[in-house]
Image (tube, rainbow, N blue to C red; front, side):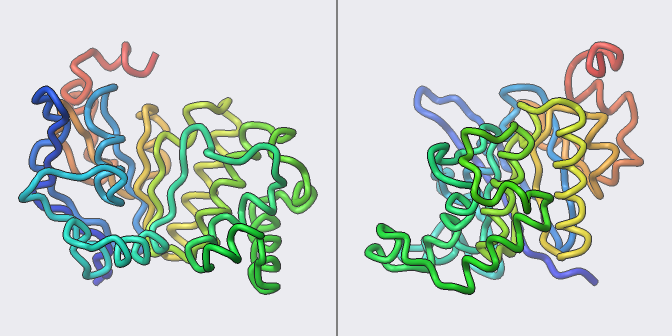
Amino acid sequence: MQETVLQTKNLTKTYGGGTLALKEVSFALKKGEMVCVIGPSGAGKSTLLRCINRMIEADEGSSVVFDGKEITSLRKKELAQTRREIGMVFQHYNLVYRLSALENVLHGRMGYYSTFAGAFSLYKKEDIERAVELLGMLGLEERVYFRCANLSGGQKQRVGIARALIQDPKLILCDEPIASLDPQAAKVIMEYLKGISAEMGIPCLVNLHQVDVAKIYADRIIGMKDGHIVFDGPKEELTDKRIENIYGAKIHEILA
């Protein structure tokens, strides 16, 4: 039986003004799983990811257990240590464009260094070698020293993935990682993420707008609507009728 890496129970988030973004969201994520979260804009997908790593605080009574630790109750130092084990891949890459691909990847090791060492980029030799290795694994061996400003969108996203992997994560969260990419670049990114979960055993929780892409790559799909989970199951069970329920639209409008 696969090990459970992440478990949320009654995860709820209310924003100022009483807007309920998440409503008692409960699910588990197992080692090696690739789970895609789909749903219309405003369904709560991004809020879900940000509550998991406490970029935003969930409401009282929410539970997020990661690697046996209750995230919601961790103090600042414990939270910082735990976040080192949660990689994050962003829609708009979140890179420092004036720096090289290598330097951006090494930023993923910042949590393991003192403030002084991090400020002056005093990285260990083994971390530099690992960063180069990861960039090579992601097909960027000839772009290691290129400034990120000079990379394509797909290449930037691969740098972002390498930055997440150098953290030695036990979980990777991806917030719309292919939304800014053309179809071919998106395919490359999804295949790398699928390989990371299947071959490296690192579970990936991936927010997507593209239902067709989710049905190709996901082991399991979570459908969200108005802050609720309205579907959670294998992709084979995501029928057109269920997709229409998630999006509140006819299937030909959703996939158009």
